[in-house]
Amino acid sequence: MSTASYDKKTQAAHHFDSLDQQHEAGKQGVWLFMATEIMMFGGLFVGYFLYRFKFHDMYIVGGDSLNWQLGALNTLVLLISSFTMAQAVTETMSGNNKKALKLIYVTVACAFVFLIVKYFEYSAKVHHGMFPGFDMWNPDMTYIMSQLRESSQGIITADPANLRLFFVLYFAMTGLHGIHILIGIGLMFWIIKRIKNDEFSPKYYTAVEGVGLYWHIVDIIWIFLFPLMYLI
Amino acid sequence: MSHHIVPLKTNIITLSTLVFLTAVTVLTAKYIHLGENGNLVLAMFIACVKATIVFGWFMHLKYEGIMNRVIALCGLGFLLLFVGLSYLDLFFR
Image (cartoon, rainbow over all chains, first blue to last red; front, top):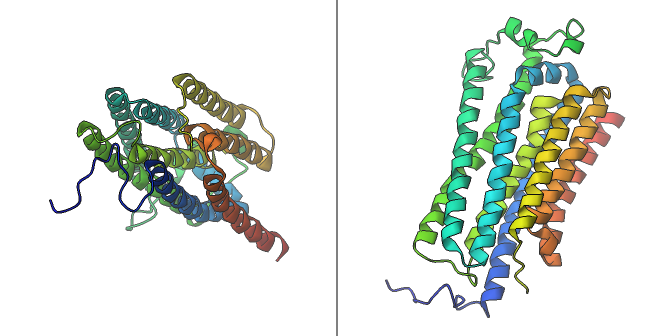
């Protein structure tokens, strides 16, 4: 190794004045990334809202055909994982790396539960021909209309061509969110490896906090996706 | 810069509040009928409260300096501009 060796736990890299400055700079970078995340998903949300006013009935039919119990379960799972991640940051800052490691394992487990539930949801949609791509769009309208809430039975008739729009948005938004979960799992394994290497201390924990911020923004996006897709 | 360590108790209260608000979201959406847009507005209001709680306590924005708050608010501000102008176009074209 030809790179300058220094103890990351007690020393800042040479281009920083202090560990504090290094930490603040790193965290600020993560926050800038968070702002871009808000705006990226924001574009999709704007699309959702604009078309909602044009094709309101299709959103009702599409939303009711989703399994809101599974959506609620996933909301709970993500909230718990956000808690364990926040607590992992607390433990790392207090120097309890072993506790932090356990909490991150729980976070990863929650992420996998989320993806498994999502797999069952997606395969049910594909099974009923509700995936709008690859010539797989062949919606089972009898099934879809049977899922519609009672107060709208008979009032709303769904046009499969317009219903497709809802599922394009559903798969695009939850799909992009799912990719974020996958990336989050990768980042967690990176943190796990670094904790096992004993790289963190109360003086140096920037990476744990940064991954935590990322994980919470993924949670926030789901907080909005759940009612918009499944409930309303 | 102070390194504020959020205690376990605060994190538990935060989680409990978020779970409670999720239950409120589900119950209001399923059992209280406020008309087409009423339920949408209510659900979005609760979601905004939940997001604020996550930003403030889980993401430590409550304990941060002004800079990171400004960055987060810039992201949200530009999003609001995007939504607002799009709606102006939709409703007043």
